[in-house]
Length: 437
Image (cartoon, rainbow, N blue to C red):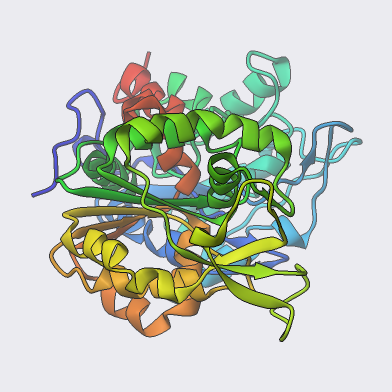
């Protein structure tokens, strides 16, 4: 049974949608270089879209895509690489609907200065059911979206968004930063949490209050960005398994070795984790890693399996680019994964696309623990699962013991805070939602 949502969160199912224009914020940030990489995030919001239409609502959808803004130059680049057009075409094919995609003129410094009145005809057609939905341009193409809070630019954009609709629904769990289209907008429209937002919050509760034994597997490309959430995860877990650059940094700090590409400041930062684990002994070390002379690829003769037990203080190592599969056959590792009741994975273990063995075998070994609740966080984690184990990925998509979060950064932020209800967009729904101020 899924945990209940905090009653202070206004829910979409309690909104009156009949004949209402509904501004729906989603996280369809799945386009790279003009193409959809994986439609998973889009598909997860279809239930909310269907519910809105089935109950008489007329949807205006919006999302951000990529990072088109150059903060130093204060310019916004508008081009096909961050356009929502591939998303619109995907939804039209998937749902057999007609979606209008308005176009607005860019300003002198790039970016769209605002929503002009040319959209009014499309809204009229939407209300008269001549079209099925409107999909706004990338929210980050608008200059007000990421502008300074309470700036004229940002306030004007927020008011323009609010003027389009009667109700706001936030289904963009992956968009945790307090930008205009997820945060400010709640001050001007009755606001509700969509069904994906609700599911993500409910499943986060199983990470924050897990059934034990609780095992977390965390990896990442930079140690310093994970210090906060890693410390919080450490407090909650029974066992912590590390991978990627995070593991390399930990190994350097514990064993006094140097690994190519790991900066000294990160090693110094990891000393606290090593000290903490000397007392509590929660970190389970994966005993075999791949050492490579180069990051150019998995080149025969230039990489080898290196046992951790060989590490000696002062040793200089090449690049550690993956976990070797033999690590998961180690009795301690196998027993830990097999006996867990909850497993949380936010991890790509290797340097992709060349070193992927660790990630592939990790997912396979976790799947052997059928009764465990298995929660995967983040787009990169999910993408690697799908790429490396496509058959397993398809077989578990509807398995009730699995849950794949749509926003890995949001999950880590919520873990760091100890609650999903402190995330700015969720807090804005609680404070302002469900009613017009």
